[in-house]
Length: 285
Ligand SMILES: Nc1nc2c(ncn2[C@@H]2O[C@H](COP(=O)(O)OP(=O)(O)OP(=O)(O)O)[C@@H](O)[C@H]2O)c(=O)[nH]1
Image (cartoon, rainbow, N blue to C red; front, side, top):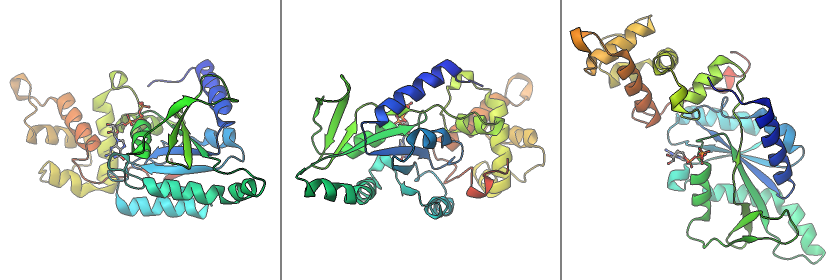
């Protein structure tokens, strides 16, 4: 499993802290299928009193009842959360609305002292592969993006204008995943936030099957037309391989091939809407 070197992490933290000085609101993108593992609690410490909006992206791939639970969880904590499908531009207007609401008082104050049309500055942050670039494109949408250096702020910083009201920092902040425990590593790997070259797919698929057997057993039975689920997940993987014709010479099951099929089916949404982590998992693993 990959780890971030402490030096690299400290440098990234410093860059993010520096960039945050220039913005009004941080958009913290998380993956709705793994809201616990894709959330980096360290960001909160760096943010201090700077407002954040949690963008619950890829909600279209997640389980809608789980989405509701997570939204309630964050609402109860008083944290703003917006559900999105950046690929289809769903939820984008809610981000703008929430940002406007958050900045209303400040903008009114500025207007009273003569500042008009002060843009709300946003920055997108998130771990790899959560949909940062897709979200940026969705936010820009059809409004023509003006890119340019702004005087008075760190040289070279690029801002993109969205309509009349918003500007966002051109480069999204890439957060390092928190490798808090082994399970977090597996979760991040399952959604593709860790380089595939480093992964043991068979081991990963067994962890995935374990969780699916607990939470969505019917998914495996239906998708792979299994007669029954075994208590032993390796047997389940072998049975999936048999159904999918993953055989090597001598009629043995090619479990690596079967593992890749299962993971690919999950990532692409072919297994249906799945959420691997629920709010009640926090502090229980
Ligand atoms: N189904 C679905 N797919 C999405 C959504 N948002 C992004 N994707 C897909 O997820 C993949 C990663 O999206 P990117 O926008 O490249 O993610 P990123 O966070 O910029 O990735 P890095 O550059 O690796 O940090 C792409 O294949 C997108 O099409 C979404 O809301 N729903």
